[in-house]
Each structure stands twice: as C-alpha cells, then as structure tokens.
Amino acid sequence: MLVRILISMSCLGLVSCATQDGAPDSFDPRHEIRDAVPANEPLSSYGNPATYTVRGKTYHVLKSSQGFVQKGEASWYGTKFHGKRTSSGEPYDMYAMTAAHKTLPLPTYVEVKNLANGRKGIVKVNDRGPFHAGRIIDLSYAAAHRLGITGHGTAPVEIRAINTAALDLKTASPAMYTRDRDSGSGQLHVQVAAMSSEKAAEKMADGLRDKNFQSVRVYVTEQNNKKLYRVRIGPIPDINLAYQVVSNLNHIGIDTAKVVTY
Image (cartoon, rainbow, N blue to C red; front, side, top):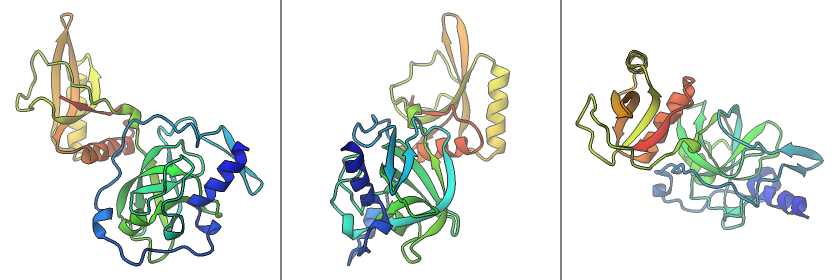
C-alpha cells in the first residue's frame, strides 16, 4: 500500500505524468529571487522508503546525499500540481525553489547549474521524479524560470548536494585570542578546518586565497593549555552566501566545511 501511495505521489514530480501542465498566466518575479535556504532537517518519514517501484523499475533511495554530484537533463513542472501533495508530504508550490529527484533523501538541498547558460540556484528536493528517460531532476516553475529552462522545457544541468549536516549555528566558544579581532560575535563564518599545527593552518589559508576565496583567516583558540588553529572564511552577510561558500569548497574537494556563528 505504501508503495502504491509513493508511486501515485511520484507523479506529482513528473512532467511526463502530466497531460496538461504549464506555466501560470502571470508570474511575480519576486518569487524567484531567493534561493531555498539550506537547513539541517530531519528526513521525511513518508518519502524515504528503502526502495520503491515505478513502471516496473525499482529505485533505491540513498541513505545520505553527502558528496552527491550528477549531470543530466532537467525538466520542470507547474500549474497542474500546484498545491498538491509531494512525496515528502509537503504541498507542491510552483513559486518556491523546490525540485523532484528519484533517489536523493527527502529533503535534500542541492545547487543546480544550467550548463547551457551558467545560471545557478539552490533548491529543496522534496518530491520524487522525473521518471522520463535521461532526466535527473524536475524543477519547480520558479526554479526553472530562474535557471532559464522554461522556454526550452529541458536543459543540461549539474546538481551538487549541499552538506547540511555541516550546519552548526551554535555560537562558538569565545577565543582566547585571534589573529583578527574585527570579527564581531554572532556573525556567520564558514569553518574550513581546525588544526593543531599553525603551519598547516596557514598553508591551507594561503591555498584558499590562491583559489580566490576571500576573507580567509586563521583563528586561534586555547583549551587545556593547547592551541587549536581554525581556518575560517568570513564574516559572511547571509546564510545563502555561506552555503554557496560551502558548496564551492565541496567543489574543490573540501567536504569538512561547516557554517558557524562566531
């Protein structure tokens, strides 16, 4: 019975399940300005069975999205499913930055890049689909509009999961001293690494600067008479940009970065 429900709901995230779908008659562009804001949310108990079957094919839901990268075709879905229930149990909102994927855990936040024009956006994956051959993600109308896909219907994209498990917004312990004292308390930073070696920390910071990362600093804390050197980027003005920095770090092979307040 659960599988039947999931199959039925998966069509909410599938353009090919639709006979008449399309864009809204009018669209307020303010709906597309903001990316989905990544958050460390619990997995949906409704939308994450170990496996499910659609049209005779069985799909295995991933236990984790960490490090997930995929290239393929993106499509979109719109008015026909607006307000209807998605596979995660949330209502589909064509004006929100959301998406459907066959195997990513629900929810997962991913950065989507249109390889045809370079546009990017962050979406929340909260639905299943698309099950059309060759397509890897179904975008909401707003997300597709932002990435410039609505006119063509599909586009080649790269999707990259954002490691929301790295989110740690607990205020960091006050440093005994820092190399840069202009960072006020409560500001967002991306912590890249924490090391016991000052030389190693400085080397990593220099490497990040060489790769054009801005505002890279080494902060030093002291606990139990031992010093710890924390490589951080910031302060960063908002959470969306902080997660963009995390995504960029993931792209160069650094998957230990996390968002912190300091």
